[in-house]
Amino acid sequence: MDFIELFDAVVHECKPMLDDYAKPENLDTELSDLGLDSLDYVLVFMTLGDMHGIPEEIADSPPELTTLQDAKDFIDEHKTKTFDSVEEAMGAVK
Amino acid sequence: MIYMTHCETAYTEATTLVHDIRYPQHAHIIPETFRRAKSGMSYPPHKLLESVVTKEAREYVRNNATSGKTAFIFAAGNQGWMGNNGRYDKNPEAELHYKVKVPFIVLTNIYAGRIASMFGPVDHVSTDASACASSLKVLMDMYNLVTNYGFTRVIVLSGEDAVNNLSLEFFGEAGASIQADQGMQPSAFDEENQGFYLGQGAVLSIFETEPAKQPLAKFLGAYSAAEDNTNPLGQREDGAGYSKAIEGALWVAKTPAASVHMVKTHGTGTPVNNAAEKTALTRTLPEFVATSYKPRIGHTMGASGLLETALMLRDIKSGKLPAIQNRTDSDSVFVSADTPVQGDKFISLAAGMGNIYSAALFSAEV
Image (cartoon, each protein chain N blue to C red):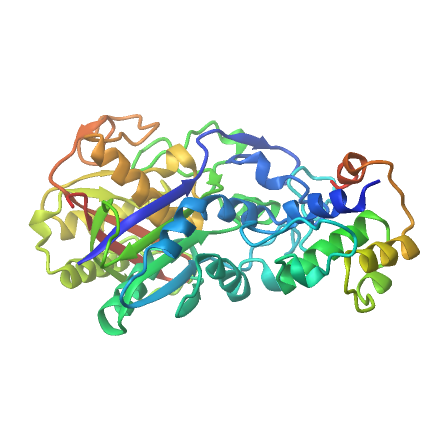
């Protein structure tokens, strides 16, 4: 599954108005360059954590994440659910 | 002079039967707002509110500088409604059940600040929790900012979490919202059809003294009042609160009562509100015709005052004051049939739990 596409789909659900948001070009993109505010981060990462079945005690205390690759690595390390496609992942969210 | 230059609305006339709660009832629901809400991925009122914060409105504010200061007011009604709170059933399988993951941002000052930032730099952000009177009550605050504090533009956003299992159960238990088995239709000032359905609704308005486009209306004045009451949830049937609000708005607007001939009522249709509003209007305005929008779009609670004002403006520009739906008797004052527009001024009323009554006066002539 393309993590950038999944991240982008989650941002589109969580962030009000996308005027300042820039879809990440690659996994090296720094999270601070995406035009997300602090609340956007909370909602986006909470959703990604929930979606992948990451236990709350882990999801609530992530390490410092700098790039999208860091976020992907964190999720890959702790996830208990996997998906084949973005559609399947988004479809798993009620 | 203060003008309303922008007005975006969200509401639906369609109703859905919410059957899996203790007090089954119809409600005006916009299904899209509940998408992925069970997971807490989004919060239904946010989706609703954000639908009226349009790109056009944001760009209008960003691209048209104003000489004074800009304020953003979020009229949130009662900020405590959340679908899985309270003493009512918390069945996660219920159709409207949703999760609130981050309650500190739901309808709070934090959310207000977040939305305000979408308009560029603002000089003042505030929220209001005056229940169902909220969106009209803040017009008094808007007037104050413009008149006394050097503001030339005030953006007002309003919406409430009006339709969720908690609000439906609460109003159902109180006997205010019409239940599915009552065999009644929503109406107002009617002997047979009494009460309302709840409805989702939101409104964004921009008020300013230096319009950069053709204004929609002139704002003349607003006032919010309280009246002695031993029941903070209810109203006085003698209409004293409404009277104070109407007289206050007329005084601020320096407008004689005899020059106002049209009224957008709060018009919930409950027996107490029917009596209170009718008594107050008859006492304060010598000659008028009045309508209610709640039978058509539901009671959108905090948003209702300003949202219904926007609908009234559209109707006035089309030349008619619309009939109050589902009236069972003929009435030429609380109109049971579409009625020609009378003059250019109208007064909008709202009342909220907590002993709050608001009135705002507009002219459709700009």
